[in-house]
Length: 112
Figure (spheres, rainbow, N blue to C red):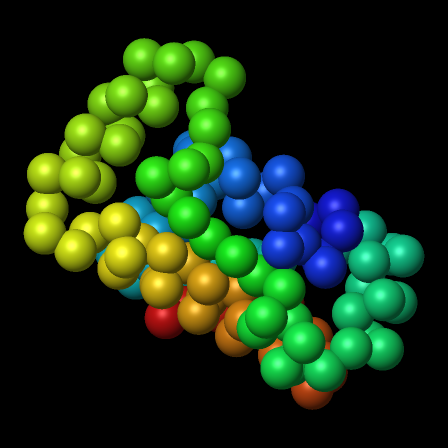
């Protein structure tokens, strides 16, 4: 994540990224968070609450370079009741957890 104050971060606006993190989480696969050094320093000066507010995930608004990929992924998500909301919630919760671990000095790994 290049700029963790990522309310509008590219990471959270990229459909493949959100979908892959959600899928990994659903399957119990551990997810790692990589931060640039300056982002890590900014992060250490923040509070978990401000980070929760900063992370905005909206899978149905996320984009993919390949329009067909975007269509297929969004159709898969839209085909299940509440799946978009569930995806948003799980991905946000995962990143809040990962960032909280950084703030508490426990490393960058998480599995939800």
